[in-house]
Image (cartoon, rainbow over all chains, first blue to last red; front, side):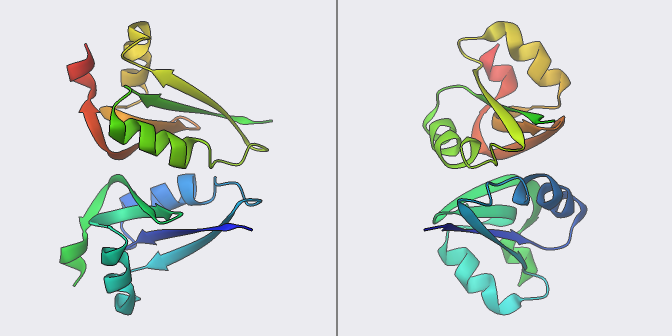
Amino acid sequence: MKQKAVFYHAGCPVCVDAERQLAHALDPARYDVEVVHLGQARERLDEAERAGVRSVPALVLAGAPLHINFGAALQDLR
Amino acid sequence: MKQKAVFYHAGCPVCVDAERQLAHALDPARYDVEVVHLGQARERLDEAERAGVRSVPALVLAGAPLHINFGAALQDLR
């Protein structure tokens, strides 16, 4: 069964680079990757926060948050 | 042809988690992943710095540095 990977971003340049580089580099045989733009999907900010995301871009991989470089703080997206 | 991905770490807990989660999640059909322990392979610190790595754990993916969470600054490993 595939694991879920969620890439949260906010459209910032750092986010776009990280998405292009990392989100699409995961093994498609093992991960279902969903890309979420938190600036547009604000209703998912709570979900991201509960997963431990504090800044974007971030990848939540099998439930664990990985913050990649730094684009914006989650609290600044609210 | 496969692209090169180098995961630099220093054995710290944050590094080990990131390695387990991310370095082994990349698509093996597209990436050759090398794991480098900069605490043990100090002769590769210059190479990491030239690739833009400023802290570990970091993944250099097709030449671009992605800093993942924060374990230690590169300068503190010298």
